[in-house]
Image 1: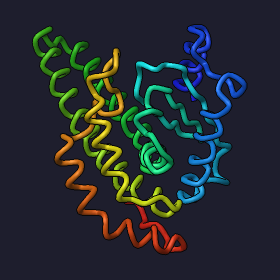
Image 2 (image 1 turned 135 degrees about the vertical axis):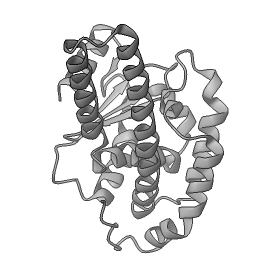
Image 3 (image 1 turned 180 degrees about the vertical axis):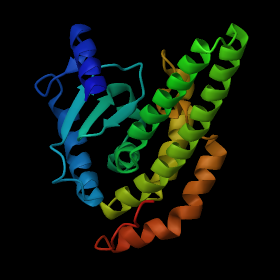
Length: 225
């Protein structure tokens, strides 16, 4: 909650918070597609969902926070292009919520920071602390990639269950990779992902499972471990 509020306040001060009157079409599009994906997730009644749009054409990113808050940076909307593309993105970020990924990362960062403090108190040298930080970053990076892959799978199933053709997800991620160099602040949505070849191969491997949900939305989602 605190991270979300800080981000919202920061963007409000920067004048980049896009209200519904500022961008009615964009808000309506994000809400319509997100509502369907959230229905598919089964989390519609668990949280009071809120959609925030940030007017940042140079930033292609979207984030979902625990508690039902989704932030979409407008730079990602042209890449989404259509309903299925946007559903791929929203499904992915909601997949992070379903997988409790943000909570896991915060927990790991806390433990690693605590271990570093103990090492420093016990007289560890600066070089030892630096090595610990490098190892910790490597571990967090590995977990990030695992989380991204899991969110890709969950998102694929969610968009399918919501009535969007999962085969369009491959086209979306191809557009993401093609557009990566066009953004002034980089392409945050791709930053922690596995390589595009691996990711698209994963999507294609999961496609038959996803098509079952597309053809029969009443199927129950698999239980997350």
